[in-house]
Image 1 (cartoon, helix red, strand yellow):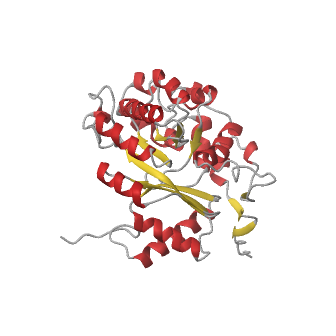
Image 2 (spheres, helix red, strand yellow):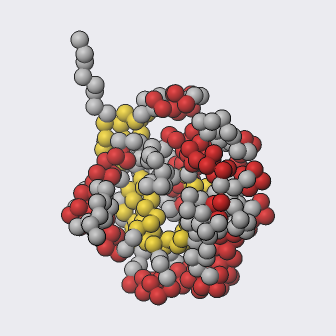
Image 3 (cartoon, helix red, strand yellow):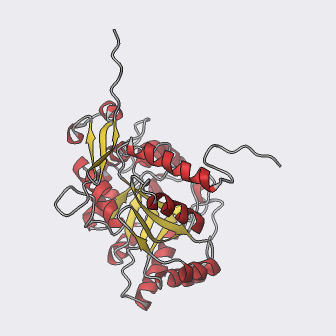
Length: 350
């Protein structure tokens, strides 16, 4: 059967993949992004292509990679064959596991599987298998991240993390949960105790909370992305865009979602979970740097760190409306003190 693939998808040659990386990084740099974390690298070949670009000096934004793991056999193989790697521009940091799916196909792993968002859910890994898998990856000493949306999936992962850390407590892997959309309040203390990082995309609040509500109920939505509660508890947080699941990669929308928690319809799930712009900016910068073990290298502008910075068109701290945020744009982007993007002057019209 013949199929048409959008550019960037399908069977891509190495030359095409190298070009994809160049195009993607230019889009990120022109949007005010100096670093990226690709937490779902599909295979070892893609790591090699990233490294080829870095070795050529053509990787202009700093990248941290996590390799997707499908099963125990693959985990054992990769742990033996692939080791951590770090340079100023490129890091191979560890592994990524998927625990559940998403709300649209109904594959979110929830305790209440009668909800539309959970009606087709199933274990990607049975609990005993997940425990073994996390033990294998934990033994590598590298980071382990989990794609998890639902409350039951979060608890299954926390059990596996706790077991692995008891077995080998010396490995500081900074476990990460990506998304963590629905968290039981009872689970937050264990997340804090295990020092698990919650890496999420608050732009999804303003973009998708109406559909999340339609796929669940108001009781479930009371525990929807409890960002302020986690922040006040001292749970490490990081913000990102999660492209291609998100409709855009621009960081300004994460700030908007975190600070307003309001959709275009006016729905505001648990407004007490709003945070300030100062807090959102710090999570998006220092929080994301911490999530990649890089808080001593970047995330803030201070002596001894990389001079990665963006000059914006407006004062971020003075933005108060969606219109102001929508008009926000980067004028210049620097990585290591070197300008890698500059807005072109608009032609004068007479």
